[in-house]
Image (cartoon, rainbow, N blue to C red):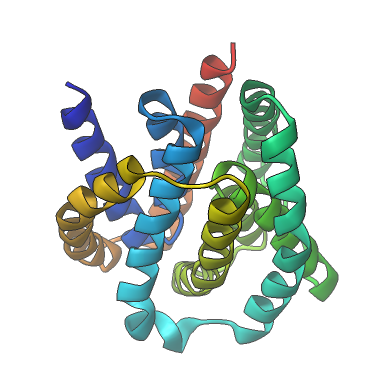
Length: 237
């Protein structure tokens, strides 16, 4: 039963990641935490997300906003060490509880048409928050998605800039996780087993991306965020 759940989770998350630029970590990590140890779930998520980003980078690089990307990287370099300290020091359930509340509150603000003005300093802050969340629970997506949605960023720019940022943030997070937490055989065997599912998700996600309009994309974003926030909140009790 667990194998079937893993297959479904990884396939759906891969399709979302490819078509939206954010779906894998937000959808997969909470469910993988239910099946694997925290270290294993986070590192499996990081490895598979890296595969997707590497596979897509040549196709999406023309839509990347390199200015925002550079500021995200600067911010995340400051956030990554903080995230690994949080992972090592805090109870994971308390951390997940706090993140679920943040996701739910900010999602409600977005649904109510709350808007954010994009600035260079905010880019760095968002990059820092993403760095903290990546090395602590393997989920860089929420700050990026909420920020881009709040600034009405076009789906092409959102997907491309986010996936390019993931190449850096996930690579650094994996190195930090392995050095400070360690790794094991289960992580790498599960990741290898999941590769064909990721490749199938890449193909299906590319097809889906071409058919998603901006309005549907925004509504879909809210649904994913609400679902994730509610699930994380329930799991933290």
